Length: 209
Image (cartoon, rainbow, N blue to C red; front, side):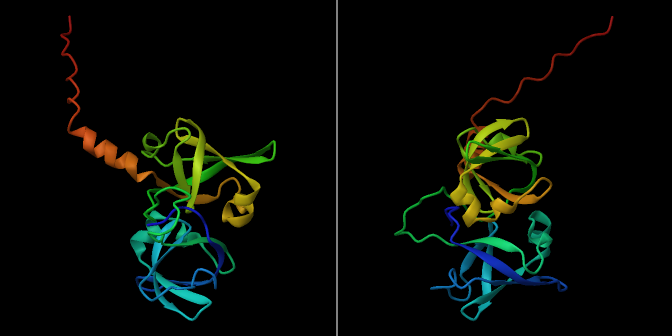
């Protein structure tokens, strides 16, 4: 479980394709403090398991289904990535509940500056918009953000200078792909209420004259 508050910008050391899984190596001394083999670290919002580390460099295995469902396969050596260790039960929940389970990959469709705030527009993949509401939470590349506006399958989020400086979102431009995770509470509500709501009435049958 994560909060969407990024702890460190790591640097991709290598992405080594294998038969399956692919080995991802990241250099990031800060998030390795207190980390043991088998612990979880969110990389651009995707929960990965630490398979080896030496204090500064660590590795994770990324299976083919994860590569297909996220933007991790786009990474190359030298790329910066958002990193967060799993939340401690005695810590403040500063963002929102983030599982590290990517729901889809969106695309940056617009970017503009407005009174010291950067407005980022994102095109959502089909089916995700119903879980997103204005002033609700959305994790973008693992960053907990508040939705400023939603119109159809596009959302607008406002980024303050601190977020731009401390995450990869400051480098995102039009056409870039980003990992998205919607608020898990919305998915639970949908599932629980589906059995309570009446089934839609069948369409009336009309006779041709």
